Amino acid sequence: MNVRTDLACESEEFADGHHSDSAKKELRHTEKTDVTVIDIDSDELSEQLGKPCGKYVTVEMSEFSVDSEILDDRLKSLVNEITALLPDGEGTVLVAGIGNEDITPDAIGPLCAKSIFSTRHIDSALAFETGLENLKPVCAIATGVLGQTGMETGEIIKSLVDFINPKAVIAVDALACASLKRLGKTVQLTDTGITPGSGVGNSRAEISKSTLGVPVIAIGVPTVVDAVTIAKTVSGSVNENEEALNMMVTPREIDVLVKRAARLVALAINSALQPDIDPELLLSVV
Image (cartoon, rainbow, N blue to C red):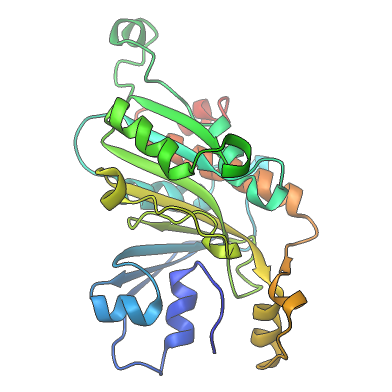
């Protein structure tokens, strides 16, 4: 059964039993998260699953944390996974929030970018005077979308990469999933980069190491599922029509969900990039 999903764990689930190859999978659990790590390590498996070769980490939780619980296992799991994907060495990290803030299910990237602790402009002398001598250089941008800027998101980020020469790019975007249990309750992290708009059938230019020349970590939260996929996963079959093919479904409480998800992801990125700063202090930024 063909389904539309950006999550590698779902692609692997739907392909299971239909292909001779299987992805390397690791499962980890904490008190409040279930973590699935999938390695796609061959071109054949990549073609079967419809995902580029690389590592895909899915962090599932019952719900995104409220303000009073934001420092629990959900944050720790995300920080650990981001840290593991970051390349070694010194250098600036560019965080790009991808999406359209005017469309609620697509606003996670821009909202996250607003809460990133940007430090590239702080010189070492000032950092030392304020007790932040181990401050790492970070910069952030909300790229907008083609209809707002007249520029492809990939063009904007490539221009910044060429000028700033960061050691890595972290791209945050909204995703589409197939399973209702993962809708608004999951974060996917991958070292393969991202193709903005692919989840809603509006694919733009790829943002990856091959296009930018630096490692790209993509972080996404599924906020939509298309109507045909819901019908297929619930009933097993559906009479597809043009109206259904163009319909996307999002949770009723999407505005609250997006704000909580963006805040948690931003704090996790800040904590991973500034490991010497107490997360409680970084809370003032997000």
